[in-house]
Image (cartoon, rainbow, N blue to C red):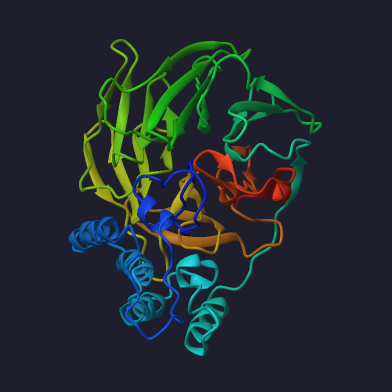
Length: 420
């Protein structure tokens, strides 16, 4: 569940990338129609170039070349290097994996050019709009800025986290919304990923603020009372994002700022790094298979599968004409990964059917994309054979933990679609 304070779409606001992507989001995009004088570099140029170096180093080990090309293209355009950016973008889109630059602010300086429009038109022909979801619930509150969603099977209710109000609400089946964890009293940070504990129906959630890189793991009982709040003991900047809870109650979570995945030790209250096969680049969504053994971790460049028993890790191979890049919410469903992809610009919900060993995508099915129902998708939750999701998180209306334009706030829509 992505705290998209700063999103992969390079939207100047949001909630998770004031860390790794603060550079690309905080800086301004160069205006290509400026005077003929050489334009000044953006203030974050050095940081962006560091990120470029990291991704270029990862290119030989990441199975999805398209993911690398797309990131490099947006980064180059951010630096004002349009010729290089277009060359990389063309190479990426030629792979026909699903990347769609049409909504990217990184390319706004060239979005009206004939060359760019032809690229977008080709993408939309290859990947047409898919609209099959409908609205399940709508909140009364307009200022929530929702991020995480979880389903409580025992009580048949949903829990939704709020970045702006710093609380968790409960959504009953009749659509009634009430506070599960109120905003007042606990002085919480913005709340992100949220998951149920299968052992006792308690609730775990991550919280994070870009201002200072403070973060906490939160634990509540089924009545919403605080059981514990846990923070890293070092002084580094951390950003706890999404999480899973194992059948024995063990918590594993992503730290997007530190590019780490941690196992939370409930006895020592320590966050212990989980070894993976390569350096991660903004780890975000995370899912656990029904066998409680296969763990799937999404970073900007793809998905890593970890065998928790054998203690091995490897990248999942997306296959041709498919990409696992830019996943926010990630969920296991009957041998497939259900993903909310908002890091490839055109938000979409996708089902990735996996091989028996979990290391290859055998079928990619786009379930929703370029739908009038969806804007700023973030995460969801599975109830039976249906996928419920936050259709309009409004994360792109936040920056530095504050709403940018209160007049644009709207009621949160929870959409639903049937899973194949």
